[in-house]
Image 1 (cartoon, one colour):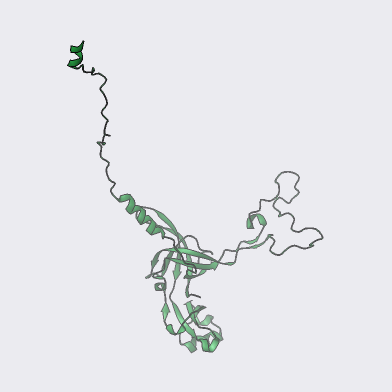
Image 2 (cartoon, rainbow, N blue to C red):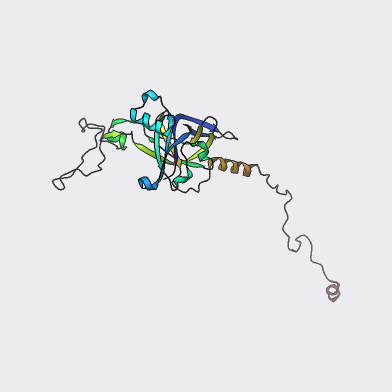
Amino acid sequence: MSIGLIGKKLGMTREFVEPGISIPVTVLFVEKGRIIDVIRKDKRGYEAIKIGFGKIKNSKLTKQMKGYFAKKSTEPKKLLKEFRVEDASQYKEGNEIGLEFFKDQKFVDVTAKTIGKGFAGVMKKYNFSGLRATHGVSVSHRSHGSTGQRQDPGKVFKGKKMAGHMGDKIRTIQNLEIIKSDVENNLIFVKGSVPGSKNSIVLIKKTAKKIKKIPTIEKITKSLSQSTKPKEKKSSAKAEPAKKDEPAKDKKPEIKKEQVKGK
């Protein structure tokens, strides 16, 4: 399991590249996280680090958490997240981790909770076509139809697509491209959409898959360099193909003198 950073989704905008091409991006605000605890294998059976993110008033903490932060001698943090690592000895309590963690990364995975849609029907939830909209259908135009069979099996199978709660689930979008990162303002610009509404909490991690995709900005610069290359001018005077010696049509055949004498 790789280390990640917890941030906040600020919203969407677009970034303009040199020739005027716009790229839709999601802006994520990521504060620096502080390592609060280093978990050893001899104590718990695995190695991990616990990172705290965000600020919170001391008055909003429970007595247990007040004692926990006092023991660690750190300021209270709003969110605590544990990440498993291979070697915990590389990390020390009190160190901070920020956007520099993604310095050499071109793609990231973003996890967040989707927007809740409430109780939704099958036409909205699963894109069912519904029943006929003309006469003959009695007040069930948007219903899902039958859900079971006869006496055998006599039940509705698990996983049947039916009306129910839609959204409000944790989902991960993989291989989102980093267009720009502003370390001074703790902002990272990611191409495409991210689950959740504005000001929702997101988890940013390194990609789980190996990607061979070329980034968008590199593609644009490559295409520009190819288009600006000077093209070789074709010579206007075309090389004429070598003509074979053909007998001239206008010229009369020459009469030899010997033939005239013989006559």
